[in-house]
Figure 1 (cartoon, rainbow, N blue to C red):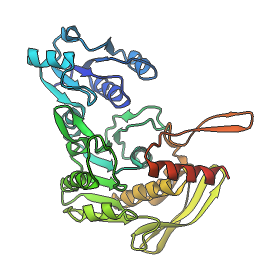
Figure 2 (cartoon, rainbow, N blue to C red):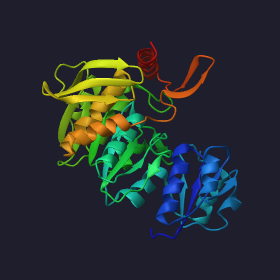
Figure 3 (cartoon, rainbow, N blue to C red):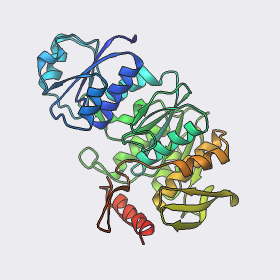
Figure 4 (cartoon, one colour):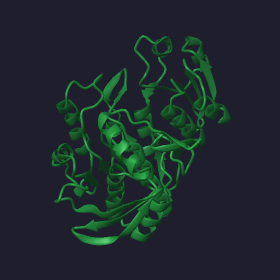
Length: 357
């Protein structure tokens, strides 16, 4: 679809959809949207971008006859605005499908998928590639503190995407990540999650298996070897794999000599039991060290300079609402974190205890 065309987004005020609206606007499309719930910070972000947002879902929101309607995955089939799209015969699609069609065709997507650590790992991968001169684009389900927004359009080939296993839309129940044309993949691990759409771990494994089969022979998968389910899944891939982890002795990439010193974590990275170097990071905790290893192993396979990667690790500030320092009041430190899965909560609490002994 040519730039300058009109794109309307139904359910535009979510973090991902508002960011996508910004991407479309930056690319040169005339963007509008609608949402039932409009509140900061996304409503402010959309207003600052000059994007018209209609409050509520109504047929008249489509009076300008957009060239394409992007339907958010929170929209149900009985939504009055979606029904008007169908009545008028307007072209419509989902967010993942349109992202793939409009932004990924001529890029090399690096998809980060898995039950835990996607947002932090995606943010770190984007920052590392950027600091190493690759000028990547990215689309993330959170806000990296180094950027202050959840998307970027670069001129380089890499496009770093957080690959969500949740369903695409009311008319496409497949996972979002199947739309993203992965050239390379970081797989952080697989556990049972999203009980509202998956009835078992096996049903989730099936979708991740479909994902790894999408990678081309020249692609790369970095997989967390501490998660046996993820290791089993990558056996179905036709591309090369890198394994990383802290607990599996067979992992190619690992970290040892881990020290927690206030606001930083220092560690030595090993490849095939040979020390590569000693590094430091402002994001702490063993779960974050696994995320770092995933990015580091991918960076080495992509041919990036290890010293530049190390400098990027140190300067990475983390992600909003991921162990974010919210306030310090009368000697009390308040941390804001998004974790809600039992494993994520356990690992986050463990990391906070390391950082604030």
